[in-house]
Image (spheres, rainbow over the protein chains, first blue to last red):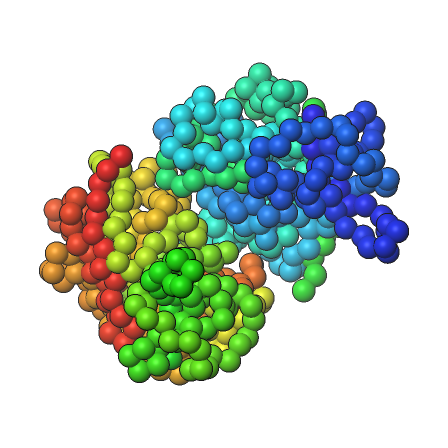
Length: 275
Length: 275
C-alpha cells in the first residue's frame, strides 16, 4: 500500500486541510486522521479502502510530527570510502527535528552564503513502539519506507566535531511523497537510490549495499531510546555528495534537486536562497 | 521566582498528579497548568502568587515535554583543555530528547556494563519563540535557569564520530529541581557549578568562565532552528569528568551523584545498573 498525507481543496465549509490517505488504484481515500503522524500515533489500525475519496489530493510532507528523526551517516560502502574512512563497526547517528522536514515539492529556503549539499536517502517509518528490540522485532515494527534528502549545510556541519548544526536547518529536509508498506518493497532485496541536480544524476546506488539495514538501525537505536509510531530513521546516503567532489560542488539558488527511489516515488525541490 | 513542576498527594478525587507551581516563601502555589512545559507553552502568562497552596508538593522533572533539548559540549575553558583541544570559535552542539530527562531525585537506571560518567551543567529554559534572534532578543527570551547532569555513556559516545548515541539514553539526564527566573540570578555574573560523587567533589567551576554564554547559545541555535517556550539548552560541563581522569573513573551501581548550582538547587541521583 501507498500511504500519504494529502492536501485537499476547499470543501463545503470553505476549509482547506490535510488528511491521512491511502492510494486505491489512482484515487486517494481518506484514513481517519489529519495526517499520517496522527494516524500512526493512534495505534495499530487496519488500513481499509473504504474511506471517502479525496478529490484533488496532493501528497505533502507525510509525517509532519515525528518525535524523533534519527539519521545514520556513513552507511553505504562507496560513500564511506569517498570520505576516506573504514567500514564502521557501529552506525554513526545524529538527529534532525520535525521542524527540519519539508514537503516532497517544497522549495528549500535557506539564507544565502551556505554550502548546501544533497544526500539522497531511504527513510524508514516506525510503526510500533520499539524498546530494546531485537532485529526481528524491529523488522516487524516497520510501518513503511519513504524517500528523504538529508540536505546538509557543510560549512556548519564541519564547524565543530558534531554534525548536528549542519543537519537541522528548519524546513530543509524534503520527505515523501508516499510511505510504501513493507509488503510491497524490501530494501534488503534492493531499492535504487538516485539524486539528480538540474537533471544531472549525481548519486546512484542500491540499498542492498547498506552496511546497517533498516532493522539493524531500529534495533540499535532502541537500545538507548524508545522509538514510537511515526518516528523516522534516515538510513544514510550513497557516494556522490557535492562536498566530496573535486572540485567541491554546492547547490546554487534555483537549482532543482530530485531524489528518487523507484517503487516509492520522487521528491523535486528547488533551492531558494533568501534572508 | 522559583518555578517547578510538583507532584502532589492524593486529592479529594483520589487522583495523584502534578502541577506547575511557584514558590511563595516556603509554600508552593499552583500555576494553571499540569506542568511547567504546559505552562510555558501556553504563552506569556504573569506568574502570580494567588494560586491554591499545594500541600505535600515535591518538585519533579520541571520540564517533562521540551520539543528540543540541545546541549553544548566543550564550553568551559578548563574542560576544553583537559580534552586536549583549543578554545572553539563555534559552539559544539548535540541533542538529547524529552525521553532522555528524569527527575531531580530519580534513580539513573541503566543496563550494566556501560561507562557512565557525570557532567554537571547549567541549563537554560527558553521562554519565548526565538528564530534568528540576536543576543539581546535571546537574553530577553530566557524563562529561567535550572540544573542538569548530562550523564554520558562514554563507550557509546566514542563508538563513532557523533556523540548522540552516548548522550540520549532514556531517563538518564536529571534536571531540576526548580527553574529560577533571570531577575534572581545571572550566570554571566557567576554561578558555581558543582558535582559530587558519593560526597566527594569531582567538578567545581563557575559559569563566568563559559566560552559561549546562555544568550550566545540561544542566538546561535536560533539561526538554524526555531526555539520555543519550554525548550532546554544545556550549557556544557566544567573540567573533572571521569573519562578525563587518570586512571579513568566511571560510575558504579549505587553511586550517588549530586549536582548543585547554589542559587538554584541540587539534584541527587543514585545509579542503578539493571537490565
